[in-house]
Length: 390
Image 1 (cartoon, rainbow, N blue to C red):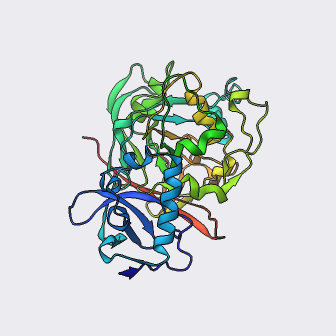
Image 2 (cartoon, one colour):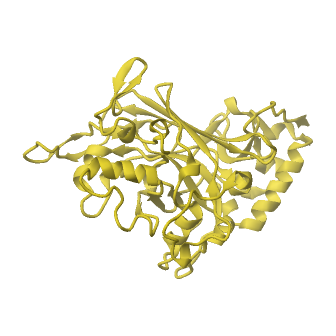
Image 3 (cartoon, helix red, strand yellow):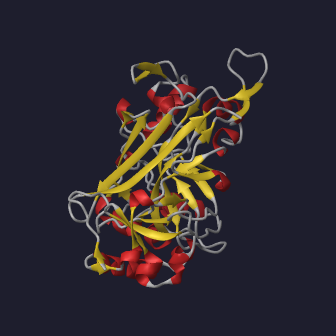
């Protein structure tokens, strides 16, 4: 038997207990929980075969009451002795995509981001389109290209047409970008014609991950009219390997910044799910931005309510992104499109002027939130390196 050491100030203490899928030495992937600098093998520690699965989906599908009960068992267990064979150092394990992605939807919930993009793309018009403050705008993405952190990103190719080009051309994207987001994972779904009210959010959403919605801005700009993002987004979406339970985020709940006009009744929350979560974006090892999730106009509960209000079903493993997280200050912008103001205001990264991503660049996004014990809990990281186009 052994006692798991949790270093003082660890973002992976007992007020966090994020879930992931890991393997050791090329063995079969299975579900674990991160505790300090260790991974606890839940199948071995709890004697429950649901955790021997190579994804979180079977456990998530068991529902809210089961999530609460297991979290209580894990908390009690790591406070004492656990079997030696159930504990592995984080450095000794390989981390995998933590859940099977059923569907993927990406929203556009930051007023600061939407306003900046509007000013860039429509300088002679109002930055926000008329619908933006009435509903969480979003698009349906591609579940099959959601990737775990650490997976290299091949530069996408597609059609693009610059303002001075007589005709479109085909080739690698020259304006490859990131979007720093949070993703929310549905644990228990709903059948057709069963909308999820905002106040039922925590009974359906299992947890949250860091998310990088890689974006080819030149491909996107040419293709998105009139139906929206497609190839400019669908080539890759990276997520962190650790899923922070919604149960761990109660201490991070805060009011929303304010919604005017008041949303329609189906979007109203009796206790809003604003979240005080701080992200950090590093470009080739240099910090370039600190996007604050607390500034988001629409909450994740409202996004889920809107996603299902038309009768659409939801499923275990559905993933939906918040959209780019940006604050009011320049150093709080969550995309390089905004940070470089469309390429017109280069950033200095490692002594070089930069606008969009070059081959060999690496982006790392991290995030933390207040924990129940007065410290900070962590999401780990979502990391990706750009490879040349095939």
